[in-house]
Length: 487
Image (cartoon, rainbow, N blue to C red):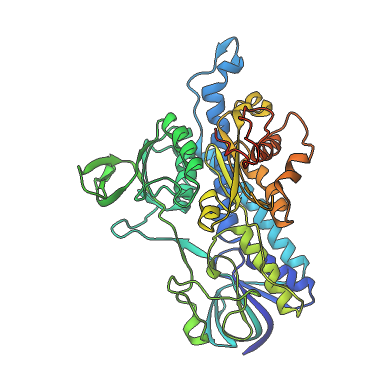
């Protein structure tokens, strides 16, 4: 048995951030991961998917919009362009390698010991560690569980990443599939489906719910759906998948039908992408032997310091529950590391932003309109369209809008929801504003440079207050609240 100070199980965005902060706090840290540093996000999720989405966006613009911008080759329009998926995969893998290599160097520079192995609890203070060298028992003073999550399985659709793909398999395609069925219209399915559509696949999306991106503001989801349909993506809402048949070289035959009853649809696809959610990696790591409590969905129950019910054991990232976001996990890692070091720390985030890299992008933070109304709050709602923003028009991205939610009584900013170009980069201003307790008026009074996309936030704030400049609003009657600006 070997003695360790703090053990971090999992080297993803939650685990490695926690390990580095622990080392900065003077603790001796051992990081154990059975795969590789960087976790799903860097290796098989956030980073490789965004690299492909970026490349797909460039290909789409050059293929379909170069002519209208006057871009030609030897005086002739660009035609019959193709994308080399093998080379694209190599570039994507290179991006991943740079980032994971950087994380490994940071861990080493901060004095963290990284072990490639499989760790399981044998008790509240001990782990069994299996490595290429064999099996050993290690004892720890504190342990942080950051084992993440994995794609949820769909009965009857066994993932082989040849014909039946999960998100990992979809990121490693070396040729453009002729046709793809995306089972699940959540953010993973739509991000990857959008990319595949842009590079030439005929994409179909089957979603069991009444809208794409369930849980997202319907106003935002409708903009994405309209753009997908414009691109030729076939969408079936309120439909459930009923079965599949492997047809060998001919592809995969899949049947689905309306959930309320109706005509069953049977079609053949080259590939089927299963993206129906994610499942916490809480099995097979001995949590029962350690006595760690789980909720009914398999997530570890934690407090504000990310402590479990077992003294000295903490949990962060996807394993600690919703929202399953890399940046949420990193924040939890910092909190747990400071708590272990005896510092005053708590996970008390007011404004947790979320981003969906569809086309156009969606980014949200704070309360949605529906959530604010459900709380019984009196609110003002303002919306400003990208079509009225000079920068959006000049870069050919007129779709979308900014929706802003303000408290009608106090003037406090409650939520900001964006669908449009660069929404992922715009949302941080809103997150900072909400976290600092800003009022809608603060955003309206802040001078934003022109011509830029962030002006849409200032303009949305003006619309929320009832006196927008670049969209027309009827003047409110005396004593009436600001108009509910819509676009």
